[in-house]
Length: 194
Image (cartoon, rainbow, N blue to C red; front, side, top):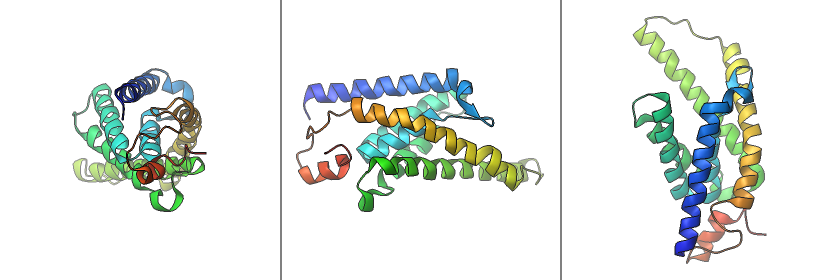
């Protein structure tokens, strides 16, 4: 990869990460449905991993995870690991069979959002069970109707402009082969090739 292409990649990713992080912590309440706000940080990690491969997904995930830890005031490191693994997982899900089709990016958002929310509810239920010695938690109906499904919906809406941004103004120029191995390029960037 040429130096100017690498610089473009770093600048574009930095702008996207900062923009969506600021949007997440500042204006996300305006983009909510049934109390669930769009998780722009999660969506950008999923789409970066899905469209551009495991290296991009891991780096973007670690960067977004660091910012999430910083702004949430929690221990630095947990978010980094979680989002780094989300980026890598997103790069491998549907990889062999579907070759990174844009239409399946939405399914990727649904799957990863579901896993993320389900794991969060499971963690808080177990924590409450052992720490507070109480087994009263949200009902299954409220978890599905007021947490998981609305979160999937707002994340899908947030994914639309992100997919357009990544497609038309992404970190890589369209139809520009950056890899020495063209087979690897076709696997990783086939969604951009016409």
